[in-house]
Amino acid sequence: MSGLPSGLALSSSGTSYSITGTPTQTGNFSPSLTINCAGQTTTINYSLFVAAPTAASVSIGGRVFGGSGRGLRNAYVILTDDQGTSRTVQTSAFGYYRFEEVEVGRTYILTVQSKRYEFEPQVIFVTDELTELNFYPVEYRKRELDRFDSSLEKR
Image (cartoon, rainbow, N blue to C red; front, top):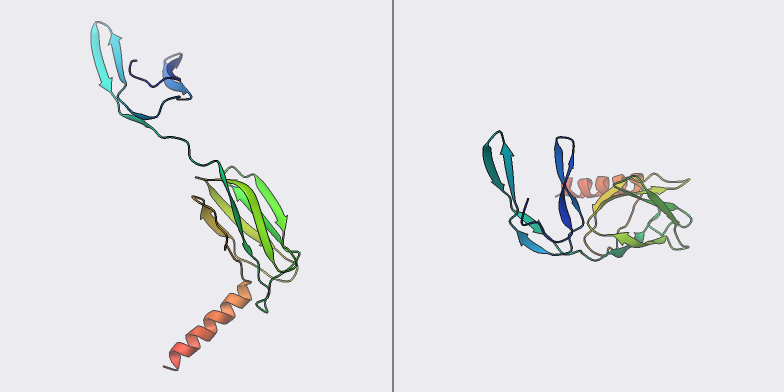
């Protein structure tokens, strides 16, 4: 194999081959693989793009509201990444929460645990800092939707 960026190499395990390593160059590359078998030669050309690393981490935060529309204190907000690893924070006296050092480019599930209210989980793909990722109790959201629907019926 030729044309791989620095840091990558062709590795074999029995009859299986793979590209291993960590590239140290970014950009477009055109590696080619030449296979010789029983006097026959075949070359396969590939296209490979290596992107530069993105920002390592950002913060995610928002507010958890109770049924009255006020911030809910002492609720637990759980951030679970796409590998199943979870972190938990407790809301402040006014319902605010914040997670620091959240890796960008990944999918997360945020859930809220409270003794008094039920909340729907939110699934997010993080590309940048999020400062107003808010949660409302299921019954509060349903009541607001019902009020909205009834106002439409009166028109």
